[in-house]
Image 1 (cartoon, helix red, strand yellow):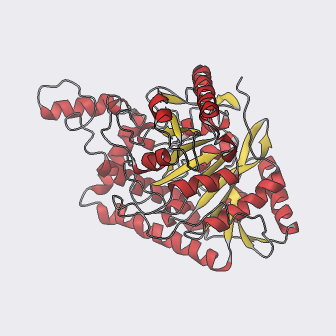
Image 2 (cartoon, rainbow, N blue to C red):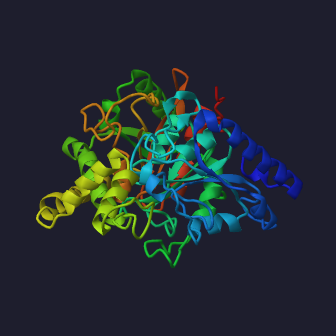
Image 3 (cartoon, rainbow, N blue to C red):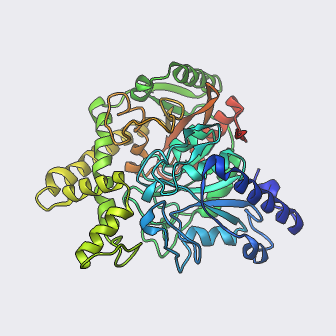
Length: 471
């Protein structure tokens, strides 16, 4: 528990040293860290009080850290050292947290496997032959392996919540605007959220209290008051109405996951919750992934147009500026990222914007309206967070494919990014020794409701504070 780690300075030093040693010891097995951070100065400047005082943490490598290499998992940024800290880095420092690592991630956060980081794939602590999921896989691996009790990620489609499922931990994506994104290297601005990982719901409450709040440097951040999530936490779900996303359950390909999920739903009913199946319009559910793919790639293409080897990034030689830019981007990005930029550029061509990009935005609005209709009647929607356990790293399946088996069950969590509503994944059980998760989504800024339902689930499963034994 995070609260139990707030000790005297000798205790803090020992705890941080233990985390650093474990991170180094597991690096060959997990490949979860891009840059190790020396905690000495942070320990010297650590405040005497703070909700995270002396707690070792890790930051996803798209969080700008002054004087510390920040690559976003991309070769083109492998020489980028920021001159300022992201807002969340400042808040964590003021709360007393000690950053020990910049965690691996899919390149520019554009992926769901954590196989595209320029340092190579990140490995799942429960089975190192398997992936962590992405794009926040390095952060997830460090929490799941017991290196740190909390790590920062970012979530544009499910980039915190899917790795949480694969790694057996809690992954939280709060409401859009709840946490400042100032200083976060972007993916898709209308979808990006700062998220984080913990190993239990109580620590998730503490973390959000530290991170949340208005930031004048991020005009999308909310003015809404930040509740005391810990003080308001309870597991009473009596009378709560919870909708099961039937479309998702029907699309899950692993029978054991469906059985486990149905058993969990029955346990919630026995606690007094009203748990009912709810079917979304099938056409809208099938449109989630293609709409997300278009919007995200178009916004990413615009956001990263400055990564050209001239203004930012590693520069490759060329006869003129155009050739320098071409060579820098060709060698600086992996093939998947280059492909996504081509798709994004095509969608942003003036002659294509109305029939591709604007159409995807209209579909997004329809999907959010459908979710709003559901949440008029229900307090939350739940479903399995993934249709399978973590796939093998050597699986050559195309992560950009829009296959029938994955189009809903593996991609529906992007709905919470479309809407900006809070969404959380937590452990539900194990299949073949690997964890699987359940996902909860609530109305905007109803994180208290989400945490309370999650606490009830945690009590029923007994799956808090899981730590994988890395072999």
